[in-house]
Length: 229
Image (cartoon, rainbow, N blue to C red):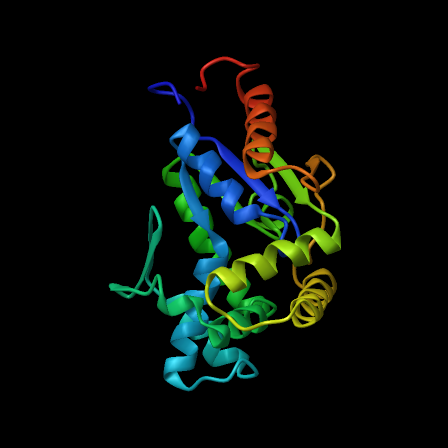
């Protein structure tokens, strides 16, 4: 971004397994923006709740933890209350817990406040399921990244196997279907494509192709093709 230019918010939404995190991270790096991993923020709160023995059904205490959590993001790292929890938040237990607490209105309000604070300080690329609709409804660029269900399952299965997890395609498909259902039907800020978001179908595209497609959209929206490299 050119020196002295205004802050820019790029919002990337979409369902699980669409490739949001990978694309958001790469686009932020290309543009020199801050990458905000919203999923990691919810995972951090879920980790703290697990450590404190707070069940996700206890909305009051979970909300208190979300409000009190001091979350710091750096490229590829996340700290919770001063502790690097980058690896700790990637366990199956935390993944499950994060999905459950993410539907709690009070937790979402606390996280949205933190996300907006970050967006006030720097140009950001933020991905999630309600960034363009609830977190930054006035984002400069909104993208809805999607892929067909079979492709999303294939990608997630590949990720899990790469991490050494012993999972089946059926199990991944079932978990993803449940997560999609939970995300799209929750009462507070459900997964939805913002009316002014650009729809990008990544089915059949490799990561480089999706990255270039998103960068092209950002350039057109922000600078009419000028100022970005």
